Image 1 (cartoon, one colour):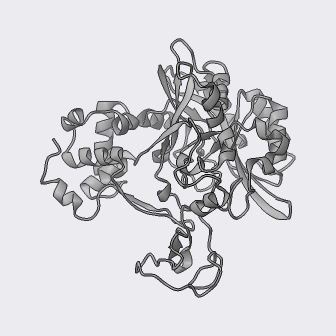
Image 2 (cartoon, one colour):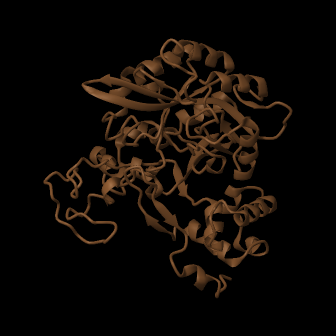
Image 3 (cartoon, one colour):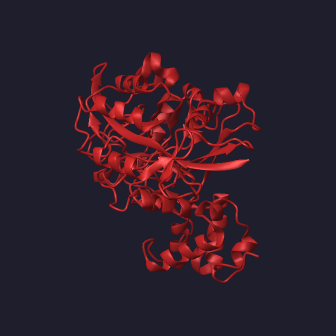
Length: 444
């Protein structure tokens, strides 16, 4: 079966805090490096970027596109993310949604409707004063095949289930349109296993995307599909595989011999910047398991200065409640519980980080860049190296510390300091001292 690796959510150079290098040409190049063959276009609501898409993309099968003049396997699907800010049911809601559309005509209709609501020039990810429900309704009115994916659904501040401004269920937000939501994005701070604890999510495919603002973060999370022999990828087939990717469908009607959504590539959720709860200004974080609280700097127990476990024990101000807390709040299954036959997942660490740790240098150094490029040239793509290339083949091409790092990632033998309150967590392949030891022994 043909393997499709898809990253459907990231941003163009017209989004705030995004690299100027996020152009179509560079996206195509980095897709090849990463091993991705289906990319979202990102930001189709931005007028300048949309003009660039129409100028530089040509049809490449029903509902998919490729760069003009290129004949490789890398395809694009028209995509964008929109931020909705509005009040509903007595609460301010801040919800991010990803939209996929099957053609330029549908995007033009959609964008025209949105120009009456907000300024599309201000940001590649526009902020609109409209409810998520009404925005989804507009998208479906423009084309019934629109794919609507609530983005990073657990992020505290900007998501459909977030602790700060979200709802308590997908249905509470989308009501009679809930059946038109085919997938939800788990986000960097959660993985599928966490989402499996919420049975309401069994109705949706659990997708993962890089949400990258720079080229190196393309496909740090990604979706893996398999196509049966002789079947070509189209927009409608992508939509069908997402629709059939839910745990409920997989339990009753799944056939692995058909084209299907197979698994996701995951960031370690602890590395996400909202995994644990905490108050960054005070340097305090907690997973809520230890009621005495733990100071991450001293690792010592502290008695809370306040009675409410959701307030910072140092200053008494509200903490940002993390994803792990919010999942536990909405879960109706225990830790480790899951539906009958969900799509699987793999947690990986990016190759550039493994190389950097192995050489004890920064990820953006020339040393890392040269080794990364050399390995990609030899083995084809980053995902191939991280998932498939054998240790014996690697041994002929790189040093033992990099090989050990890759093997550790495959086994999940890594070291994690969870993120909280907007601060990314730290994932290390080697703990202090391991790199020196690994230089003195052979794996094979």
